[in-house]
Length: 161
Image 1 (cartoon, rainbow, N blue to C red):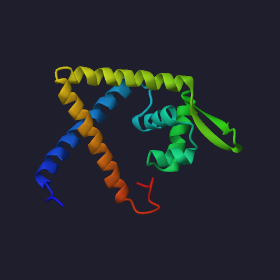
Image 2 (image 1 turned 180 degrees about the horizontal axis):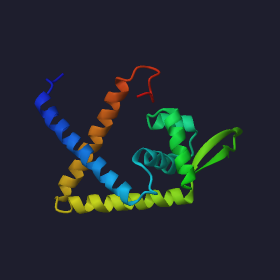
Image 3 (image 1 turned 135 degrees about the vertical axis):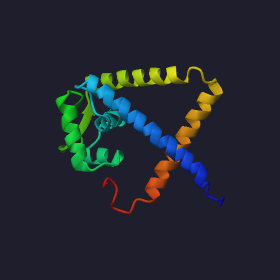
């Protein structure tokens, strides 16, 4: 095993803190301008429902590493906004599934388009090889972070924070 690069990790950590703060501030400003919008945590649920739904509430909570009661409150907000609906599971009518509505899908597609256009503008001056390398390294970092987090989560603690 190689020696830990604490100094390099410190530089990465500093930049991650700057990035997260910038993202949070940007999102807060966007949310202030668009008060009927979906907050970030709730938006993550919509992403999962559009991309991989339908879900049972408990399975959705597990997928997003969140507490089931928190997910329940967030789903209630998405239902009020008309972005998600509750339906009976065709295989077991006693089970409720969460499904994105057409409006939920439209909102997600539009938000992704705006996000992707903004990122494309930010990276427009980067050479294509740098953009590709950045995307690959970011994906690798995220996957490694997920594995690191999962390895350090005690049994039964998933979703508790």
